[in-house]
Amino acid sequence: MVPTFFGNPFYTFLLRQFLMQIPSEICEAARIDGANELRIMWHVCLQFQSSTHDSQCDLLMATSTLVELPHLAIFFLQRFFISGITPGSVK
Image 1 (spheres, helix red, strand yellow):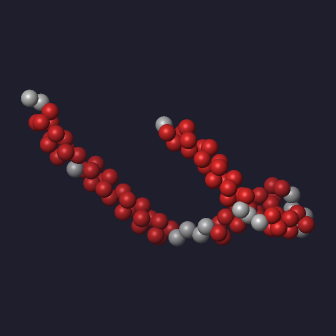
Image 2 (image 1 turned 90 degrees about the vertical axis):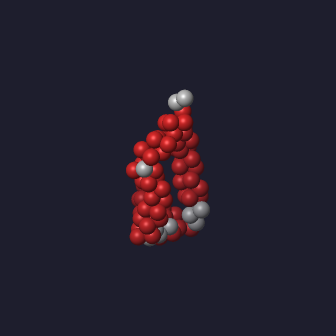
Image 3 (image 1 turned 90 degrees about the horizontal axis):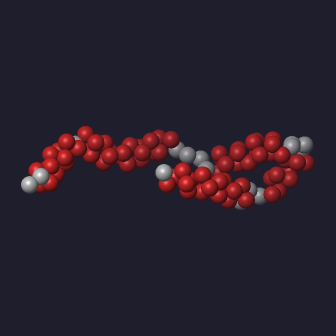
């Protein structure tokens, strides 16, 4: 529930901060070339984002797998955790 209350405004803030750091000269050059506001936003600002923040998918997948390993281990071994907790809770 917490991400629904705080996630969307936070993402909007991050997008605003990213768009504020794009040099205005790039947008002005696109206007001079004849692009309207939607074309500037779609082709210039979003292409700037992909060239600035290039992600390496193989490293991202490896990191995601390593982060998930403890969760998967707990999921598959939870019967041992529960069997260890149950005798101590009933007296």
